[in-house]
Image (cartoon, rainbow, N blue to C red; front, side):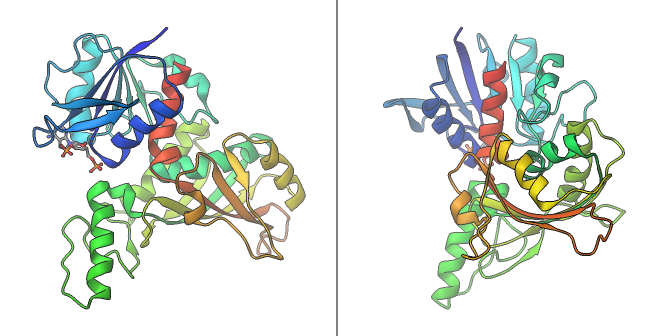
Length: 332
Ligand code: A2P
């Protein structure tokens, strides 16, 4: 079977990665439609050696389309996903618009592929930080149920889109040249700086990114009782997120058991060289499919033996977004 596919937001950071992945993974395509704003209409993008023309996204864009890969932003997904579904397409949605909708499966293929079959036209792709945490944590949770997760993120500019990545480069150059620089996409200068994630802060003091990690993980794991707290921070990295993850299990678990479970787990690679002090780094995770996992150690602050520390890195644009969505589409 082959598919008529449309990419919504084809010119963005995740949209262009969709193009690379469909080509690289030889996705069974009948046709490919590239949709973006009127600003990009007429622009050419290369796919399998051919130039494809970007079209403006409109209500009539989905005639004859079987599959939509959506990454133009939440407001566009809210408006256009139902139109695409009505036209007969299945939407794999990279935005947060439908993630917590009880009728929409939220899927990490390594964790809950069985949920794909429950879709009613839309399947949601989780938040990038959630995916990067879930891939290494779920196989452990399956063996020894988690009671609590404490996670701190070190997030790349790519999560705020292609314009934020460009702003990081331009801002870095301006600082090196001792020239004035005012950020326009991110709220603070990203280069040579670290700041709290730029999503809105709610009444409980948590920002939206942090609450996504909490609520989405519970939904994906089908484990509503796991206690999760997150602190999400932006760092001057272009496209791979890092996360420090502290886990509290129900039963004691040793470092060796963690290593054995993770060595067999899909979608990740252990990078944990203590003598060489070589551990996961965003530079190594960038452009890779696997989540890199290291700093595997028992938590000395949990004397009952139920605590484990991990440090992980994953490419935000690939497994954090486009790759996860394409894997869902492949399973469809
Ligand atoms: P465009 O490049 O024409 O603005 P990113 O996440 O990297 O910021 O990318 C966002 C994607 O969403 C881009 O492909 C962008 O297209 C697209 N987009 C933004 N505004 C619209 C719009 N009004 N209609 C359709 N697509 C849009």
